[in-house]
Length: 153
Ligand SMILES: [Ca+2]
Ligand SMILES: [Ca+2]
Image (cartoon, rainbow, N blue to C red):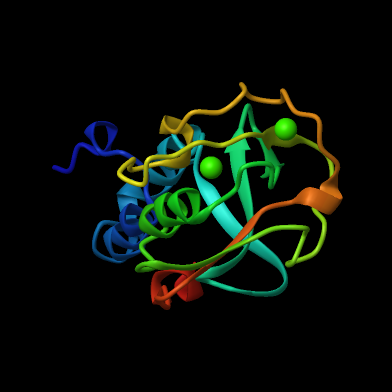
């Protein structure tokens, strides 16, 4: 028996679920449901010109995807993002909506990571939804890796 409730939901975990639903088909529904519930504060890299390991940074919070403002966005912040999505080291911290403008919520502004955090939400910031930005300031990253896990999802 696999107890999914003790496992944090990461992209690597999602791949394990893909394997699990093949070998344990009776688990697939509950496993995916649990994963969706625990998916909060996950991040994704999207936008025109993006790849699985580069793009506009968006964070899932309060059941809504939102962007990150580029005020104070630097390589330490990008490093945390690249680590979080299993994409190697950060090559660039892009500002000014390099990967296109998002829409809707701007979740984070004035992000201040030391670089050793394991997720972006552990870094200093002004509070979710607290910002003085527009989507023309959406932050992005370019990471060194290629995350093949994402292609399967
Ligand atoms: Ca910063
Ligand atoms: Ca700001």
